[in-house]
Length: 207
Image (cartoon, rainbow, N blue to C red; front, side):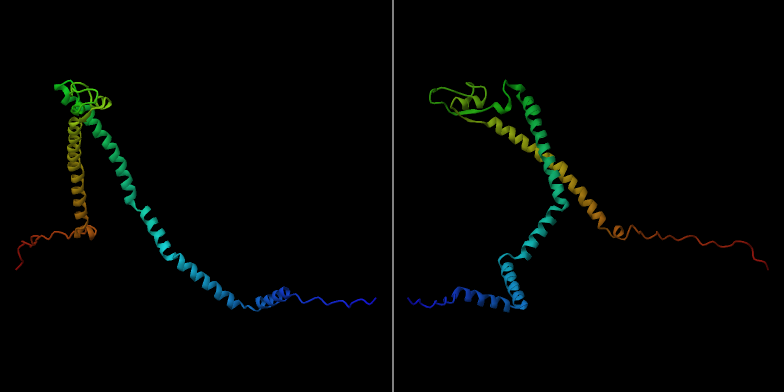
């Protein structure tokens, strides 16, 4: 029985393609790679502009490093503390003094706008505080608390006028002094000119 001759394997097209790709990769020069990298870098910079980001970071650092930020933080802390002092002055000192003429504190003066549903007859004498009236369902007008806040506002305004405005006047005066010509020249004030009497000899001349 005759055997068929062995059939030669068909050439692998994928392998040939890979060999061609390898040949193409080898043929890429360094200049082509550099151009490709430059193109990619340009596209990345266009998507995320580094100049604007750098400028933003620089401005933020400069903003944080300013002395005004520290001054602002100190001012906020002092303002918060002073607000607590003013509130204590109004609530703990002025309000009790104003309340000496009656049995209630200033903040507890109110008027009933509408009574609760289960009670038809009510007034400000029914409950001692507006909070108690609201707890029972009444609607109140708290004019005592409003007057207390007005007093607190005027105290704040008076303090701001005498403390802040006067301080700003002193600072403005110092700034004007530093801008003076003799200060800029290092306090080099010209000497005062005066006419000294001429010293003459009164000795008799020898003849």
